[in-house]
Structure formats: structure tokens, C-alpha cells
Image 1 (cartoon, rainbow, N blue to C red):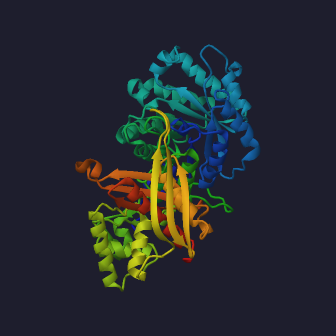
Image 2: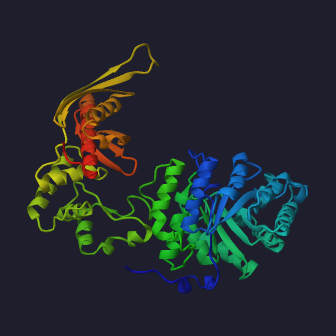
Image 3: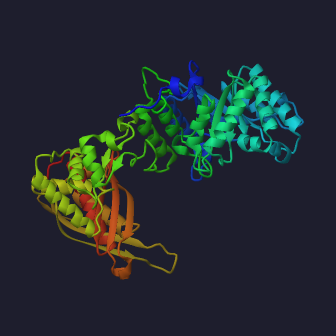
Length: 550
């Protein structure tokens, strides 16, 4: 696979200079709509960030947010960070006061964080209209607060808020704010695209201007928001123009459209520029090979489903569908992939659809453990079954378990026969008027383990009740089913022209607590489609656990 330029050729200004990766997931990322991190959540995410190899973890705003104050107290006792230092976030002193007397500044010191990130106004309009002070007083606020924190032994990172918009309004004042921070002792000044409206060419030109003003040794950083869709590109443009410190959040979390996705930033810097930016611990190596795992682990904690099309770490980042692609990938996977997905802990996936040819089926079979390379008749049958099934409404792109059962039927002659269904039925009842919740009940009759089983399950809906009844009927013969749980359920009406007679497709996801798998069902109504998907999921789960039919 073609490699990118090395750091020495692409970024000569970084030769011999330590690069800094600063994560702000716990503070800026937590401002995303739908995310509410508890102190326990933050204490669980911080070690994952440390394992990744970031240099700084911004933990929150002590003094302003009570749970952030608690986080820093507990972090000092409970966290064992190997690569990263904790940073407390706060603001410059208020206008007309002394930094030493400002309670928010004192709270930063009381947090005992070794690093303080100080947000400072660098747009004259914000100083005058938001802070209601003069430009000169705002510069004094920066100078006084930075100087105090440095005297108290803190490493100071100044976030020059609204810097790029401020520079375009009054470049001299924006430069003056940066210079004031450095002259007071700031270790880093991060230039912030707070409104997220910049594009790479603008960022590059402004960073070059600032670099010339502050000299070659000052450490400039980049903090980008994604409102223009350019946060990662803007960050890379800033690095090329002279920044050696980058800020961002895991999975691009953040208010509005989010921050620069730090995972994509570091992957590009390491894999495209050849720049080692992540720290490594011999006992816990972490780094890029753990990128995908860590991204998904943090998604679990934030309770935000992973975005399948995220660059590098998404489930679809290396997923291939078209038959032409599959034919080429069978010859050389690098022909249709910009990197080897193993470098960042991801996998290539083949999607089986009505676009699939024999090459796609062969590669997907290999992925699932079936070698079909010398079995053209099986390949032909499977290909035709897929095309026919998709014409009737099935889709296997997101239902690997159903496709694997189809393969088992064709390769082994039949699917595993764990039980025989005699009948099933559901009842939905509501007692009372509108607003009274309905209840559902399902009865399943089947044969398993040499016995006839009859069970009744209740649920908040007919599918939930069917799921309970099916597992109640089978758990006696197959106790391995005990941890199985239905965790996702999607319904789509495929032919709306027929109204209530339309074909229904159901996708479900089931888990055993360790892994999850997905199946598809299609029928003339919701319940028949759901029943097919439920039984397929149960059969696949038992087979995957190595359970023999009883």
C-alpha cells in the first residue's frame, strides 16, 4: 500500500519538536446534545484516552460545574495515567478584578491539575460586547491570569476563543491576544475556530501569519469545530502551516455539529504524514491498533451509537458492496482501501446484496469461515438465492447472521435443527380509554429436547412478548439461551402502495452479553417478519456457542 510523505518531508517545521495531542472529550465533547457524562463515566473514559496515547486529557471546569470539581478530586486518587496529564478548564479573571481574588481562577488552582486550559477572548468584538470591557483590559486579564497560574507551577494552555473570526475582523488585536499569552508564560496558545466556519485555505493563511508573528519556537495549537464540515481538514491545514498541538474529541463529539474528530486527526498524522503523535507505554501499548476498540468503548459509555460511516473506525469504513470492487479485492485488497484496516484495529467487510457477484459471496464466505473457492456450484446457488431473496425484500448487508445460516444450508445441506415450531400466537389488550397502556401476551408451542413445550410470555408489545415466550420455551432444553437478549429492533414497510397489505422487513440485533449479531425477517405483516428474525437469531446464537441440537 502506498505510504504518505514522512514527517521530515511534509512538515519540516516539526523536525525535532515534540507533538502534542490534547483531548477535550470530557469537557467540550460532553456539550453534545444527548450526552450527559457522570463522574463515573468520566473516570471510565479517561483511562481509555490514556491508553490511546493522548498527551493531555481535559477533565472539565472545576468551580463552575460541581461534578467536574468532584471529578478532579476523585481523579487524583483513582486514576493511574501513564501517558496523559489532566487539564482543568477555566476562564481568565473577570474584568476589574485581580486574578488572585477571582474564585473561578482559585478553583483551577484548587483542582490541583498540573495543566490549566484557559479560555481567553481574542476577538475584540467579544471582549467589548460579551465581556463588556475594553480591548486593553481583556489583554490585561489574559496576562494577569496566565502569570498567576505559571507562578503557582501550572503548565498553561490558552485557548484563544473565536480567534479566526476575530483575526478576520481585527488581525492586529487577535495577534496581540496571542502575544500577551505567550509573554505571560503560556506554554501553548491554541487558535480556536469556535464557530466552526473556517475552511482549510483560510486557516492555513492565518496560522502562517501568526507563526511569523510569534517566532519559530512558540507552540501554536489548533482547536476546530465542525460547522462547515471541515474540522479535521482545518486541523491538518493548521499543522501544515505551523501548529504542533492539536485539540479534538473522540468520535467528533461536541455541541452543534461537533468538534474535530481527534481519532481521524491522529490517524491521518501518523499514517499519512508519518508523524508519531501518540505516546506509547510498554505495559499498555495502545496507540493506533486500538483506535477502533477505544472509539467503540467510549461510544458505549456515552450511550451514543457508533456512527457506521466514521472515517477509520466506523463499521462501514472498510465495507465493500459492488461486485466490481469484490473482484478486484479478491486479487489485492489494497486496490480499494486507502490503508490496511488492521493498522487501526478495524476489519474489511464484504456486504452481500443484490449487487453481489460470485466474488463478493466468496469473500464474504471466507470472512465467515467458509472456503468456497473450489465449489463453483455452491457459489452459484448462494448467489442466486441472495438475488432472489433481495427481490422479495430481504437484505443481508446488516444481517450477517441470517446470511451465515443461508451459507450453512447450502454448504452443509441443512440448517441446525434445534427445535420444531408447532404454533405461536399473540394477543394485545388494552383495558381503559386512550392513554391507558396496552399489554401483550404471546403463546409459543414447540418441540425441543424430545419434549413438547408450551410457554406464555408477556411484554410491552407483541414482538417483545414473542421473544420472551420463545426463550421461555427453549431455555429448559438449551440453558445457554439464558443470557441472550434482544437489544435492537428496526421495521421498514417495503411496498407502501399496498397500504396495510405492504411487505414488512424486520432487522433485529441480539446479544449474549459479549457479542451481538443481526438477523432479518420478511413477511406480510410485522409479527411474521419478526418471528422469522427471532428464530434465526436464536438458532445462530446457539450454533455460535457450539451447542448441539437436542
